Amino acid sequence: MNKTILCIGAGYVGGPTMAVIADRCPDYKVMVVDIDAGRIAAWQSEQLPIYEPGLNDVVKRARNRNLFFSTDVAAGIREADIIFVSVNTPTKMFGAGAGRASDLQYWEKTARDIIENSDRDKIVVEKSTLPVRTAEAMNRILGSNDKGLHFDVLSNPEFLAEGTAIRDLESPDRVLIGAMETPAGLKAQQVLIDIYTRWVPREKIKTANIWSSELTKLVSNAMLAQRISSVNSISALCEKTAANIQEVSEAIGMDRRIGNRFLRASIGFGGSCFKKDILNLVYLCEHYGLPEVAKYWEQVVLMNEYQEARFVENIIASMFNTIAGKRIAIFGFAFKADTGDTRESPAIYVSRLLLEEHAQLAIFDPKALANAKLELQGVAGQVEYITDPYEAAKGAHAIAVLTEWPEFAEYDYERLYRIMEKPAFIFDGRNVLDHRKLYEIGFNVYPIGQRALAHLEKIK
Ligand code: UDX
Ligand code: ADP
Image 1 (cartoon, rainbow, N blue to C red):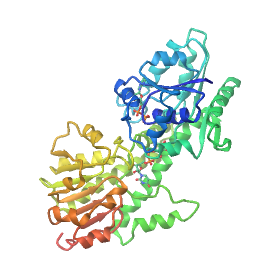
Image 2 (image 1 turned 135 degrees about the vertical axis):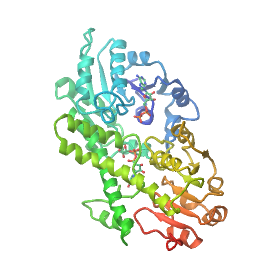
Image 3 (image 1 turned 30 degrees about the vertical axis):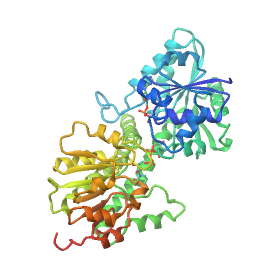
């Protein structure tokens, strides 16, 4: 074997990333450890803990060849030459920076585990999203060991998106590797470059100083989210006028300076990264005495919350100002299509608001029902989790589409119309359905950023 790589944290980032590295570097031993024994058992089984297209095949090729999953963090650290840290960094919920700053307790614990279990120099790679200058703190903690050991800290932020993680890892737009600008730092950077060049063209591997690398991750996510919030803000204006957000998005996206990606209006962005990373950026700006910059970015998150709230207000207003006791079928709970992940999904907020209004929810999602159940645990109200869309819609007054699963467009809406209460409503929070056709079937259709197609408009 060439070198031994360890990844601490077997989540949505650590698992797929290590699987691809192991697949592409058969002469490296790759170990993935986690304190969550259930998660590790799932990685070792046929039923992987996360749903990600293409992941099964990659794991099957490498597992037990040069890819190993274990709960023995200490043994993993002892054996490793290179340690990726991919533990969770949730938003801090207490003390200074609560609700904004990253909670670094998992990271710090990991750094201490590394010192305790190491007996030779190692490279430590930040893979989780972290506030700028975390590497410095890491350097301090790792450098404070009394064993005379030297650790090189690198920043190698992850840009994979869920649902396309394997494709993103196999042919990334870029791989960013930040290092300390010292001879040892640059040498460590080269070790990581040697791994990625096995399958990534050298010109796509970008080196940077460690602070730029850390900041790039936050800014990348903030700018993607900003595009969505910008389009969503305009969707509100479109609904008041005769403009159509899809036409506007398509037309502005044809300008190559703007580009056509990430301009889909929606009920709002979700996922584990966007909100957390922006709040992190906001906190950093405040910390460094830049309140104007902090406010500028905070608005991206506020606009997202406005969009979610607006969607629910629209449902209530359209359904004669009351949804109490009405069954509403929720189509899609995942924060986006092709994943079972529900972290920060707009569906959570929307469902809670609907339940507060005493609606009865029938939730259907092709992959995320188990996580949906966890998200709504303890929330008062009547909720059913249903594995068939037609069952969910039976007797419902409305369907609310909250995730852009392509299969939603394939359903038999004539059949759905027949089995629903009348008047039947569809609130397409992702603009994935054929609105004109639904209207002709008899539905009252409420898209995002487009005029409603409602038979009842006059009565309202
Ligand atoms: C994101 C970044 O894309 C990725 O680079 C980073 O590593 C992690 O965070 P992810 O959260 O997996 O990835 O999903 P992404 O595809 O970015 O979508 C985020 C949210 O925005 C989803 O809720 C999605 O539905 C929504 N979205 C996306 C829109 O509402 N409109 C769009 O045009 C695009
Ligand atoms: P991400 O989306 O960033 O991958 P996840 O929450 O999916 O985040 O994964 C992070 C993983 O890190 C979890 O499975 C969690 O159990 C694990 N983890 C957290 N702290 C430690 C630790 N000290 N040692 C090992 N694993 C840890």
